[in-house]
Length: 358
Ligand code: PHE
Image (tube, helix red, strand yellow):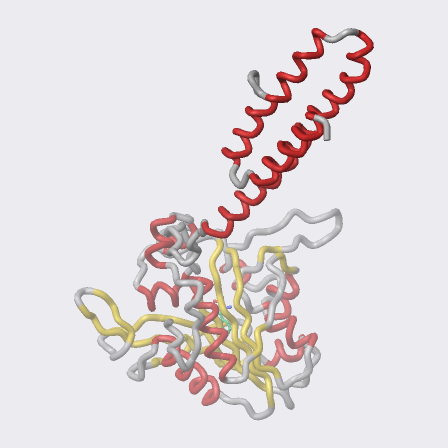
């Protein structure tokens, strides 16, 4: 074996044996460093005769290339091994608690609507919907408010701009048009509630131009005022989560119900605040009555066969009474502090068994 071949096998073995990056670097310096064995061979070429260089040159350069390649290969292998060793030993503890992040809340209006849907679902009521931009027939006419009817002016109505020759549509002033939409699209018996936004041109501490109502409608055979009273009593007791809720029914007037009944609930003063229950005083909570014959007729049903009752109430007002807010306008300000204080946890889904108040 020539000296060069011997050197190559020695270096190759040393590279093979190096088991750390430091050991490998030492081999590299010993071979290819300034004082290295391969470098020393390269230097001898300068003193060679051209013929000699022609023979020895490729051999010596070949040695250098082989060794450099072996060093690079081993270095890559050692680096991969070092990385794998680190990956195997270093760990991120994913069980540490995550930092507190800002969280949203469920708005009291949404919460109360969910509570109402839960209470009425238990009594067999489905949820119905109608458009917020409504035509005047559904919002007024079919509800026994013909064009000249003074009640039409009672609602401070927002009118839309109409196309030429068309009757302007309105932002619905109550959820009662959903009664009409349900009776004209569904066969009785009917049991629905219809929660949603309504609009009136009105604004102070207890009125906002947009607010929320919930409508109730029952159409069946032989329905009478007793059914209405029982339903409202059951609903209000479940909603306020008290058995001592007392109702007072007062004769009233709505064009679409006959007779019409306004319902008050009794309250007691506790630490200067009104609390539902008892009867120290009365607060009006909803409008209701037996559906007017003319309304049943307008929907294409025979009022001698089908009767029913309807009621409507303000969702925001119910929320204020139950959860103790006193300014309606704050409901729609989007103030994060208010939402944090009065909002509900998204996981507190109202259920009758758990208490709808969550
Ligand atoms: N729509 C009436 C209102 O907005 C409430 C109501 C609904 C009254 C159904 C009677 C029956 O004031």
